[in-house]
Length: 419
Image (tube, rainbow, N blue to C red; front, side, top):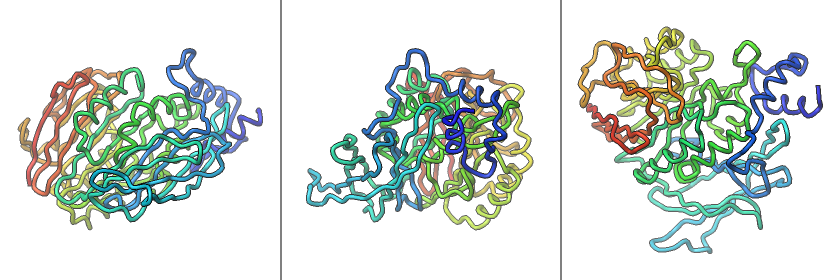
């Protein structure tokens, strides 16, 4: 085995299920190398440089009182800084500028290493608008703006299903449409399978470029899909990619284990539907038991009720569905992906109204251009085949308003649920 390949394995695999160098056969290494190969005619520059890229805002605590800003450079950049300036009514006074140093971790692609930087913003004032940039003089990113929200009256968010395929040449315009149409959104939720191959640096470049307008302007909540995992020759997941954990440094109970974040009267509970389903089911029960927020939104990748033909997630139905049924009066939405179709519905004992359904409402959606055959099922109230979409959701203390739009900005689905 080449030394470069060994270094790649040790750095890209982090966590409880790592393979040792002795366990990585030449055949497995060849598989990973093939999956991480770049296209013959790339659309974007993807090799890291001293200029920062892949900037992402990641909430670390309730109400985004702490926000991690993550970005990437090449390894010549040994230190990093975020410069942030609060604005007044008309400008951003330079004398109010603050500088915060970053830390970094090393991620190695098969052909080169890179640094992922992280700086943490604290003590931001609700209602204030800020401009910020990351890097180190003279290699700075462009300035970006971020408004720190109150999260008291209305929680508005954009919800995106799997990208996976057609990341830049198809889905980029959908992300841009969403942020242009709903620039008042305060959060973004990604449901996993952002890319097709966990360790493909070019695919990660496409995703970050496609979502840049979203990720630099609002806090991002994300849960991993199965495609964020490296797999062995039998297709068994062996470990979450370091690209994921370096981009999204949430306060995990383990690498991409469950976590929750409160934004005012809404609690977002994020689970990892790829592993430890029984353990997470017990954790979900304990968290929901003590939840007092007006609404709870559940977020994970694999759907409890499938939207596609011949796909059943028995582990979720056995371990998580009983918990959802137990606390159904606390849960407004269950946001999911994976099945590459559009569908929404609910539990068997529900009001099946298309416009005013009972809660919890379960949704499945896709943003990319790979689709599965839709199979109409009893849990569904609305189902649309072969469509890429984005969703805009507004939550107040007494109701949730949900709208789904196609890539042509056609209103696919709309409903309202009330307390």
